[in-house]
Structure formats: structure tokens, C-alpha cells
Image (cartoon, rainbow, N blue to C red; front, side, top):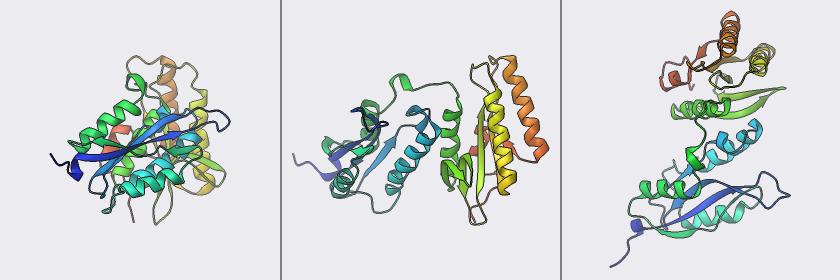
Length: 254
């Protein structure tokens, strides 16, 4: 039986070395293509599952989102393009040489490859840390068509997410009070840094806050109320992560 182009694909694993002096790497994404560029895609691991360093999360997000964007174009990457990418990326982030694979269904095959090579063991952390919530915020904004940069400096101030708009940048502070930690002073300092940066740079912005859970400590609840009052007094809107699925954000693309 003749194998059609749709039934034969090629995949590569995107790997990342966090320390160039050590021969260690982590799988961060998997790419699937066919010879003609008729089907394929990329599945990437959440940046928060790859590093606890916000700057590394921002670096990985920018590189991997750039690869992901190529699969949203009408002209999808084909085998030749995947080989070019594999040859070009060979430093801290690199792509393995393409390997053949049977593709009875492109989406199911990509999911299976992701589970086999990339997915965090155990499905990843379910704790709603700041990094996990930032994953959700960046993804939700991009799905609405916004160009978002993660862990980005504007002037001398670093912001969790920066939205590019023609009328100016829009910055986001991401906070989570749904973790079991006891010391909330760093979170409050984060909020203060954000408000001070907005004032100094004359930027528009909002805070996306994951509220405490029923199991949260009383210290988390008090800190949550304290920080929310700060934003209210400063006239900075706050949202919960689930609200970002709505188009009623008060933002515009133009």
C-alpha cells in the first residue's frame, strides 16, 4: 500500500540548555511537519514548568512563541524548513534532526509526541504560582490577538507582561495569593514595584490577581485585601485570570 504525504510526517524535539557549561538539556517543545508543508504544528511546554527564573521564562517564551507563530501562517514549515531550523539553532536552544513518524491524524500525533517527549512528569504542578498564572495570562491575551512580551523591561522597570499597542504599551502585573507560602512581603513588594513603575513611566496597566483559595492561610487573605486596595486607590484595574477569556478587557489592538 502506498503511503500518502498525510500519513508520513517528521518530528523534531526542541531542547534547552540552561547552563552552557554543563551537558544537560531539557525538552521544551516538539515540532511536527510533512515533506510538503501541508500539515503540522508545534506543542510547547509552559514556561513556568521549565524555569523558576522570570527572565529565563521570558527568553524561552519569546523564542518558542516565534516558532509557534510560523505555524499560524498559510505557508506552514515543511521538512526542508525544519532541517534549516535544526541547523540554525545549536546553542542554548537547539532542535534535534527530524525523524520520520507515521501520522494517521496530525493533531493526535502531535499530542502523542508531546506526551512522550515534552510533557512534565505527572502533568506539572497544579499549584497556582505566579509563573503558572502568568502562563494563563499571556496565553489568554495572545488568543485575543494581542502581541505580548513576557518578563520585559521597560526603561528601568521589569513587568510580568507587556502588551504592544499602536497607542502605547500596556503593562500587566501578575500576582497569586493561592499558594501555601507564609511570607507575603515579596508579593506586596512586587505590587509596589509595579505601581511605582507605572507612575514613573506614565504607562497604562492592569493587575491580574489570583485570589486566595478556601484552604489559604489568613495571612494570604489579609495581603490580598491590602494589595487590592492599593490598586483601587491608584486607579489601576484588577482582573482575575478567568476574566481574561472575556473580550471586555478595555484594551484595543489599534
